[in-house]
Length: 188
Image (cartoon, rainbow, N blue to C red; front, side, top):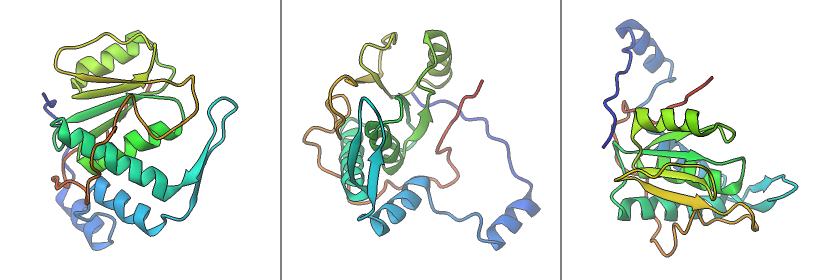
């Protein structure tokens, strides 16, 4: 169940100015990411980490993100749904972020050091369709939510808790309302 969003409206004159200046378009987060990722596919991606280093290209991560988006779609997750994730800085976090945006879901990145109280509050507020977290994290299971646990003890990789597995990659970002929420952030 997607949350009922209560968004602030932007003054008409300000919205008109943003559009006139090219600051606002009808391009969604997924479309924006997809275009830039395709254009920069050969660039290197490096995760500098003493415990989970990773090196590859934007094309590698984009391909995994497109498969993750396909997995989300295969599991009925897309526009209007929320995908929350609590992961440290790792390649899997990029796969989840990019893939969820490509699938048209609203993203909720949760600071990796938030404890059960903070995470519980966020999950209660948003009722995500999917929660991606580190294996062993003290996450309370919830009916109707898909939980994906990422094993962060092994080598870094492009799989996210068993997803995307053999899911077919999406060809293009999902069609979503460009005025719908794309990302929700909670801060202290």
